[in-house]
Length: 605
Image 1 (spheres, rainbow, N blue to C red):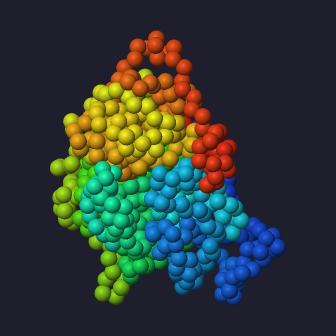
Image 2: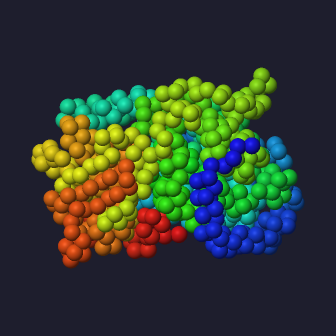
Image 3: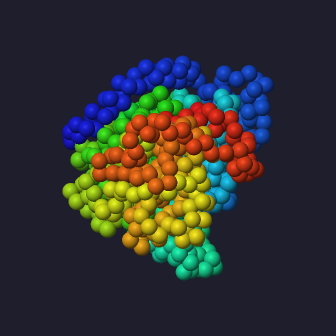
C-alpha cells in the first residue's frame, strides 16, 4: 500500500484538529436524527396523506405500507441551461428505476439555475454568487418534509452544485449522490473561439463573426466543454466519491449515461438507513474527502471559484477549510491535466485520454490522495481508477484504466507533469490576501511590477481601452467588486481586452476583489482580494500611478507605498447606490450586508 505523502498527511491532520469541535457538533446533530424505520413513519396520518396524495397507486401503496426507501429528487432542470436541459426526462427515468427495484422516488423540489455564460458582463451577474445560498435554502425547503430516506441531486453548473451540497449536508443523516448529465459534444476548438473573441475586442472581427464562433462552440445540449467551474464541480463530485466512477464526463443521452444514472439511484437506496450499507452523507464527506477535493483542483488546474465554494461546502460539514490549506498543498500536487483555458483540449478530450480514472490512479499511486475514504460506489477511492462500459448484454461494468495516458498533450502521469505544482497560489502583502491561478500564465509574467490604473467598474476598463489609454504597462485595479459591494461578479469581460494588450508586448496584470472563475487564462490576475474595498481594505487606498508588485512565484501582493503614507490615506468610498437597479439586485441587499469575506466563502449561510 502506498504511503501517504507527508504534506498531505500534515495538512489533513491540521484541518482535522482545527475542525475538531465544529465537526463533532455537526456529527452529533445529524446522528440525533432518528433512523429507525422509514422517515415518513414519523409523520402523522394527515402529514403522510399529503405526502403521497399525487402519487400513482403503486407508489402510494409502497409509501403507505412499505419498508423500502423513498428518495428525494432535487432538480436544477431548466431548458435554458444547456448543461441542465438533459435533466428534463430524469425524474420519470428515476421514478421508474426506483419502482423496478422495489422502492420509490419523488421530485421533492426544484432550485434556480442561472447561467453565468449568459449573465457575463451584465447586471444579472451580480446575483450569481448569492444564488448559491438561495439554491441551498431552496434545497433545504425541498428536503424539509421528512418524507425521504435518501436524496439525488440533479445539478452541474457553477453555484448550483455547491448550493445543493451545502443544503444536502444540513440533512447529512440521509444518503445522497449527485447525478450528472455530461458534456456536450466538442464544437469548434476553444482556442479558435478565443482568437475570435480577441479579434473582436481589437476591432478586427464583426459581431456576426463573434456570434458565429460562440454558437459553434456552445452548440447543443450538455455542459460547456471548457474547464471552468461547472466541469470543476464534476471533477470534485467524482474525486470526493459523490459520483460513480467515470460518471462525470460521460456523454448525455447515451445508453451508458442512463446505465450510470440507474446504478446511482440503486446505490443511494442501498446506502440509506433502510438499505444494506448505511452511508449518511455527513459521515461520507469528512476531512479526507475535502482534502481530496482540494488536491483534485490543483492537479487539474481547476476553477478559482472553489477557493470560495469548497470553503463554504466544508463549513456546512463542520470542517474549517482555509486558503492556507490550498496553499500548503499546491506546492506538492503536480499539474497533470491541461484543459482549456489551461491548454488546447476540452473535457471530452480529457475524458478520452483517461480522464478522472487515470488522474485518480496516478495520484493514488504517488500517495497524493486519501484512498481510504467512503464513496457511493462502496469502495475506497481505488475503485475510481476504473472506467465504466456496457458489456454485450448491456450490463454496466467497470474495468481498470490503462496505465498510459491516451493523449500526453492533455493528461500526463506524475512522472512527467505539466508543472510540478498545482497552479493555484495564495498571495499576501500590504494589500491583504488574494489568490491567483498561474497554470496558464507564462513564466515571464509571474512577476509584474507596473503602475496602477484604478477602476471602480469593469465597464470603465473597456472605455479606457476604446479611448486608447491602455497601450502601456499597467496593473488594472478593479475594485468594489467584492461580495458586500455588488455580489462579487465574475469579470470575464476583461479577459479578451487584457489578453490583447498583453499580446502587444505590454506587461499587464489584474488586481480585483471580484472573481474570474476557471477562465482567467494567460493574464496574471490577483483575485478575491480581501479585505474588499467596501470593507475598507487597502485596495480602496490605491491611487493611479502607485506601483503594484504582483509576485506569484513568491506569493506576494503589495502596493509600493511607504507604510506610514498608506496608513494615513483614507479609503476611496465609491457610491454604489445607483449601480444596476433592477434585475433583482435590491432583493439581495441583506445578502450583501451579511456576506462573509472571500476567504471564508463569501456567503451568508
